[in-house]
View (cartoon, rainbow, N blue to C red):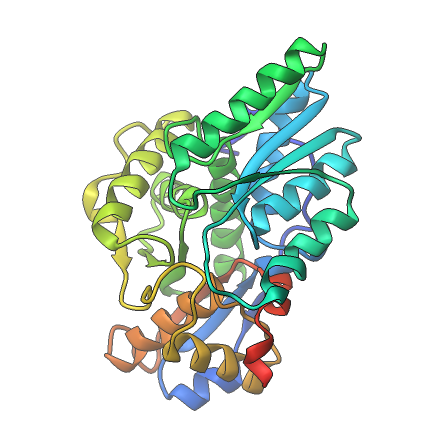
Length: 335
């Protein structure tokens, strides 16, 4: 096990299913699409953050923390699941919500993830800037200093790309899980597609697949920043993760595959391709995608299929990273 040297707590229902989307595949007339159902990880409505938090919270517990702090957007899945993980481990939790998406209907700011965060009783702070990762982290660090002065033992899960990516270890572990599933079903996978935002999941999966010498390319669909900026982030983090698991030098620039064609008009904002992907997945498979992460990443995969990147007879994996609660922040989807 590549991650055995790092503390971990059990938070997720794994292994998650690897499910063939037969109806959607037939509709598109291309490869067989297999969904890795990490929306089914179980923690507070599931999602990819459960795997990440097993290592972040594991590190926190090993260091004797009694309070967890983190930051994210208003509809942050990471924030929602961090609160759930802290509650499950009996830790206090404070979160910071950033104003990253303007001009939304009131439901965006009150329902879905914000509602669940309040339901679980997190102490909530607000940060006015949505594109200032260093500033958001600094605000959390300042709050942690206040808690230390009160005798608490806080643990901060930061947002920026400069910290030790313990969460990425969750997707090194997921890579091991996937390779075992592929072997069990005798599948030759031509590629894995996923949303690429913080790069924690993307970097972990790239590093894991390279460490296992799988030969399977990982395609990141950009959901927050353009592919040039995202490439730097993913590469730096993936190389750091590879070093953490004893495979320094395993990841090179050519291993970071990105596509930002579905990003516009920006983070958390719908576009026609995203809306089509969400409706196709719902209608043909009963699978729910969200406008921020999975809708855009599925739209990117569909675009690659239509352009011939993957063809009939091949098998491709779509990593469903969750995000279902955010749907309730977009009532216009069914108006």
